[in-house]
Structure formats: C-alpha cells, structure tokens
Image (cartoon, rainbow, N blue to C red; front, top):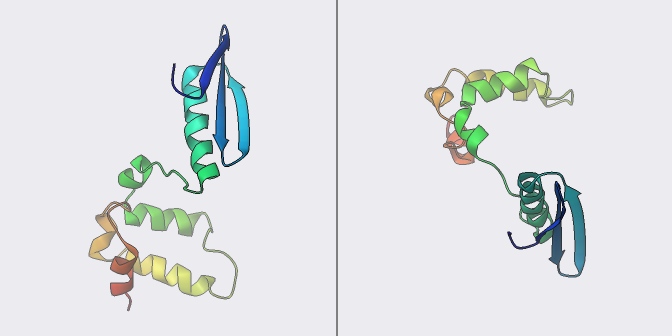
Length: 113
C-alpha cells in the first residue's frame, strides 16, 4: 500500500497528509482516487501546485487563444480589448501551431507588434 493510504474496509481507502502541523484525511471508494487526492492535496499543502502537463502538451497556442476569445474569458476590464487583440495576433504567428507547454512567456513578448 502506498505511503499515507490505508485500507479501511471493502472499497474504502483513507488518504492522509501531515505537513508542518497540518493534518488532512479523506476516504475514497478506489485506491486511484485516494492516490490522486493525496498527490494534489500534498502539493497544495507544501506550497507547490502540481500541474498536469498532458493537456498543455495537447493544446496549441491557437486553440488556447480560441478558448479565451470564444468563451469571453479575456474579461470585461478596460484592458480586455487589448488582450483580445493580442490573442488574435498570436493566432496568426508561427507560434500558433506550437504546444502551449513548449512556449515560454518571453517567446510571446518577442512577438509583440
């Protein structure tokens, strides 16, 4: 059994986290759910958010820009018009076909108008 996970009975797995005086536990019906919760929660408790990069590797910059534009996620603040213009511009660059996991913030800064 993985560290920090105990079998409590049939279809009952309790995951526990102890870190710097913080204690949390939850019970799950499957071992995989207990592992996933423990991994995600321990990262949050220790201060480092765990990010699953699989989705980022599967998403291109153009797809991410579309997601922001179509879903009106650019916001309604005074800067939203500029953000939307920048997103439309990035969709026309050679970076558009690259995975967002492969792009760094400085790559986008270099592609300013």
